[in-house]
Amino acid sequence: MKVLVVGQGGREHALVWKIAQSPKVDAVYAAPGNGGICEEATCVDIPANDLEALRDFAVKEGIDLTVVGPEEPLVRGIVDLFEEAGLTIFGPSKAAAQLEGSKAYAKNFMREMGIPTADFEVFEDPEEAKKYIEKKGAPIVVKADGLAAGKGSIVCKSVDEAKRAVDAIMVDRIFGEAGDRIVVEDFLRGEEASFIVITDGKNVVPLASSQDHKPVYDNDEGPNTGGMGAYSPAPVVTEYIHDKAMNEIVIPTIEGMAERGIPFKGVLYVGLMIEDDKYPRVLEYNVRFGDPEAQPILMRMKSDLVDALLASINGTLDSCEIEYLDDAAVCVVMASGGYPGKYEKGKEIHGLDEVAKMERVKVFHAGTKKVDGKFVTNGGRVLGVTALGKDIKEAVDRAYEAVSKISWEGVHYRKDIAKKALRRLGLI
Ligand code: AMP
Ligand code: GLY
Image (cartoon, rainbow, N blue to C red; front, side, top):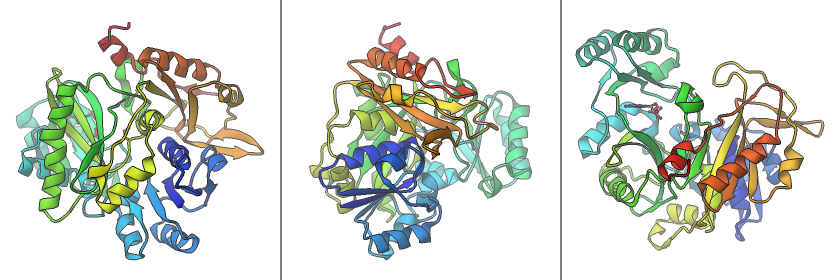
């Protein structure tokens, strides 16, 4: 089989790495890929959002399976476009991808289905939104309706801050047309987890649990990023929480979409807020693998991912099981100093050869490229240094040992990845 992976981040590197291990796969292509991906796959210089060019390439090259990393091509309808051309592609249709593409759609759907989530209202008029905020009080959360590269949710500590967030999104339009509508919702307390499943529209196979680290600094301080590190499994997702999330959230979501004539196929990623270790509620839906969560999850996966992807497409997930190593995996993201704000690119990355000699460590590339035989930084999140260990403690120690060997000018990473898990397990 020839497989095409669309995207250029650490998640896509992990997908390429895992897919290439399948005995069914003869060749892996990536569009556009990155410095590390292009060492392991044939990179094609087509941006992830140029849907027509991707389709034309897949037709010409005879691609047997396309796997899409990021949300934007999914929300813009890449699956529909490929299927019209007779191509096989993993992921939700444009209509189903609205679960991530429009927060108002997702929240109204959850309300209709009785799926636990924060109470909310949707607004198209900033003054109405501000009146609602005054009535509700703070803390409160203001969210742009559309895609905003993971930055569209503003958690506000005061009413004034929330009103400013409304103006920033709806009047100053900092996220462009994503801010035509907003969702204003109650602030939820608890611990977050990423609950990710593969579905064929009827059957559901949960992936291993994981937890992300969104804020840029230690102790969850500073602005939110795409994710500064992740680990799997996440001890906060106990069997009790797993069953509750499946029964109260995932299964009603899949059934509700099917009832509406919009069967959801592909990856459904439910961002959970778990209160008091008892009550999981939905913060958001994503319609794709998490980044960085995909990195530790795929590193632990023993089964052939391609079998699961094909079973999702063919509607045969009821006969598919995914097995994992008992080991834990931890991914520490190394980023450019200044990210998620402004940062410089083109810094030479040192130490990758040393880390390549380490066992049970894999460095997934995100914003890198190769220039004159050397890897240089080329984005905000640069590397996802991912390690296995017999438990989270061993995995985290090994990941940081690898991180300590890698450097570039201005590098930034969190020093406390997986601390919540270590505390919960009584290991620190
Ligand atoms: P989202 O883009 O909806 O995933 O939100 C990004 C981040 O903002 C989440 O990972 C949470 O940390 C935080 N967040 C979003 N919604 C809420 C909420 N209702 N209550 C508390 N925190 C939230
Ligand atoms: N790590 C968060 C996300 O993929 O949206």
